[in-house]
Length: 331
Image (tube, rainbow, N blue to C red; front, side, top):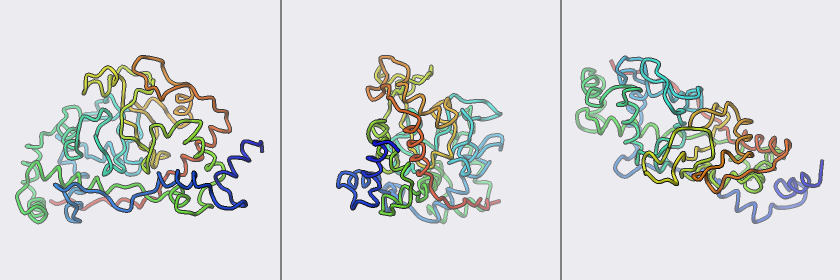
C-alpha cells in the first residue's frame, strides 16, 4: 500500500485514529438523502392518485397499437431505463436518444435530455403523443379510457370529475414522483455507519470530489446539478441548443443523476458508452475539444488503482429498492 492510499484511508475512514475531519463531515452532508418527496402545489400527492397513475403507466391503451407502455422504455428492472443504447418506439423504430431513468424526478428542474419540458406533467405528454413513440394524442387516450368503466370510476374518485387530459398527466406524474432510489450503502455511510462501504470506495469518494472533478456536475444527493453541459462526446445531436439557440449549448445535455447507476447501462444521451470503464475512459480523455465543450471538461491523469476506486465508490450508489408489483388494470 503506497503512501497516497494510506493518507486517503486516514482522511476518509479514520477508523483507528479518531473522528473524521470537519471538512469531510461537511462534504458528506452535501450528499445526505432528503427525508420527504416534494410534490407541486398544483398537483399534491394522494395514494389514490399515485395508484391511478401507476395503472396508466403500465397500460398499453396509452399507445396506438397497444404495443407499448411507459414501462417499455422505463423498466423498473433496468434502473427505470431500457437497457439499450437508444430507445425503441412505435413499430420498432429506433430513436435518437437513450431512455433516461425516471428515478428521483421529483427533484428535477427541467425534463428530457435537452430540458425542453418545464414540468414532469408536460414531459409525460411528449412520449405519449410523439409519432415515433406511443403515437397517441391525449384526446384519443381520453376517448379510449372513457370506454373503461373502471377508469371512469377511478378518475371520479381521485379528481371528482370525468377523465380529461390534464388529470391523466397529473396522475402519471404523481406516480413517477414516488419513484425514488432506495437507501444505498453510501447513504448508510453518510449517516455514520463506517463499515457500510469499503476503504476503496471511500478513496473513490475523495477522488470524485477532488482530483477526478466528477462533483463539478454530479452534485447533491442525486448526483446531478440539473444543468446542461457539452462533455465532448461524439454526436451530431445539438442537444440543448435545439431549444435555446444558444451556441454555448451546442451538444449540451442534462447531467444525469448517478443513483442506481450500476443498473443503467449503457450510458450517455446516445448510449455510446457500454459500461462504466468506457465512461471513465471518456472523462479522463477530456472529450473532443470544441468551442462548446464545457470548461469543466479537461484531461485527468488517473491510474488504474484510482479508476478502480472511483468504480468502487459508484457501486455504493445502488439502492436497496423494493420490488415493483404490476397493477391490476381496469376493464
